[in-house]
Length: 258
Image (cartoon, helix red, strand yellow):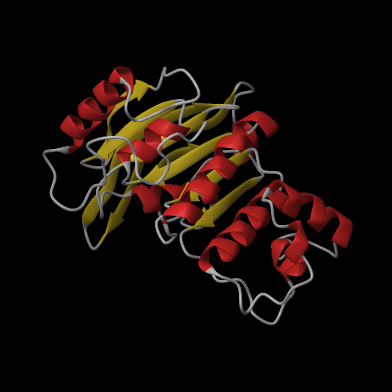
């Protein structure tokens, strides 16, 4: 079972030691160690079935059938891929759905402003597009003012323009808040555009990590970006299954100022 969240060291947002999670006798996560500093944006890469979502669920407190030590902030939030808000609630109420009590609409609208969605705050949630539903999911996560924001492949269900807009939104979070962000993704370019550090999850452990020391704004066509991409693809290349990387400038965000 995880150790108490309050035990996190003062300069760390996450401290994981020897984390193991098994399903049907197979260790999906096998003695994993991870430390994240407060304010750090980290991307964890891995192919389908590598355990990325399992790791995020453990850190979110949704999966406690584990061995090892997991120290996390008391306030953390998880935004998933392709969420669907409750259709019979208005947007602003869906944004506050995880908060205890009855928060004011004004607070909801301040959070929705961060996601660029204030103008639809009183709309019913049923007809929302995928992009709009994802913005509500981000708002739900931000409303908790988490010390750890967990993003589980949140852009994969969006089309290219909506994905680029959502990436800009998430990139802006690093300037607005002091908590740590952990993004799980199969998209190497996405990790390099957004993160301060990239990790490769393989065989149940963090098999490789590298700082992403690229100047901002970041563009996939630069030599430094291409070199990091090639290195990460090499680390991921021994596994089977889909992985996303683009051979040239990203069609989703060719000049996105991240």
